[in-house]
Length: 459
Image (cartoon, rainbow, N blue to C red; front, top):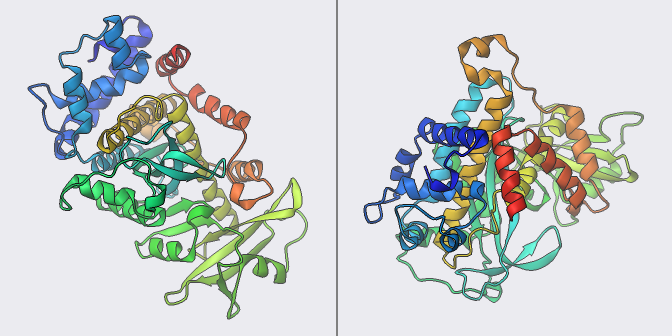
C-alpha cells in the first residue's frame, strides 16, 4: 500500500482495508494485465496504479511529496510517468471490464423487475493552456454556451436507480482543424494509440455508439439508454435501436427535426400545437405515438410535461418503446441526473481536472480511467454501507432492497432543473449542485468522507 495512506488513525485503517478489499475482490492486477499494462523496470504495475489511485486521499501530489520528503515509494518519478504515458495500455477496456465486475456484484442485490439503464453525457475537461497539449482544442461548453480550451469528456455510465457506475469514456478533441490548438501526433494506424486518437476526433454521436458497443461486448446490459437533447436526433435513436436497446431522451424544440404523426412529417412544436392537451392535475400534458426516421422508421412515443413554474413552458420526452406507460417514461428518465452528480463529484473531490497536467493524450486518458476507478470504489463502498444485502445470503433474503427512484422524485428533479430554454435543461445553479454533492458525499462511509474532506481542505 502506498505510504501516503499508511494507517495512522481509525479512518486511515478503515480506508486501508477498503482499498485492499476492493483490489482483491475485483482482481485489479489481473485486469491491468489483460489490458496490456506492462511492468516498468521491475516495479509491479499494480504498485504504481495503487499509488496514483490513492493520491486523492493524501492531499498531496507526487511533486509536493518529493518537495516535502514524504515520497517513499520504491519507484522513481520517471517510472511513474512512463506508466501513465504508455500508449499500449487499453484504458477504455479496463474501465469497461472493471465496471462490469462491479455491476455483477450490485445487480443481484435488486429484484428482476428493477429497470437498469445506460446514461450518456459529456462534460467539459478544461485546460488553461493547450498549445503544447496533444489534441488540445477549442470545444463548445453547453453550460456557459461558449468555447473553452480542453476536451469534452464523453462518458457512458450504468445505473440501477440507486448506484451509478462509470463504464467507459473518451476525451473528445475537435474534429475541425481550425479548432485544434495542440499538436497532433503521428502513430501507426494499426496501433491502439492511433485508434484512441481517431476516436477522440469523431463526432460525439458516433463516439456514443462506439462506447455502447464496447460496453455490450464486455457483457454490460441495460433496459434503456438515457440522454439529453444534445444527442436525441432521429438518426441517433435509430442507431441505438439497431444495437438492440431502447432510448428515453429529451427532445430538442427544433423546427428542423421531424417526426411522422398521422402520416405527416411535423416538428415537435407543431405536434404539440395541433394535439389536444390533458387538463386538470394530469401528470403529463400530452402523449402521442409517432414514427422516427425516414428511410428506416421505428415506432416511438412522445410525452410532454408542463413546467409548473411557467405554465406556458413545456418539455418533451421520446421513448422508442411505445407500450411503456407515460409515468414510467418520466420516472426512468429521472435516473439520468446521477451522471451530473458523478461529474461534479469527480471534479470537486476526485481531482478529475486539477490533478494531471501532462501534455500527453495517453497520460490524460490514463488519469481519467484512474479517476473512474476511484469513483467505482467509492460507489461500491457506499452501497455496502447502505445495503445490508451485501453482507451475505442471510441478509440478502431477509432484508428489503434499496428503493428505486420514484416517479415523484424524478418529476421533481426534472421540474427543478427546468428553465426557459429547453437547451438549458439539467443545468442548475451552483447552489443546487452543491446541495446534490453534499447529499452524495454525506451518504459515504465516514472514513472515506473524512479523507475526501481533509483533501478538499488541504487543496
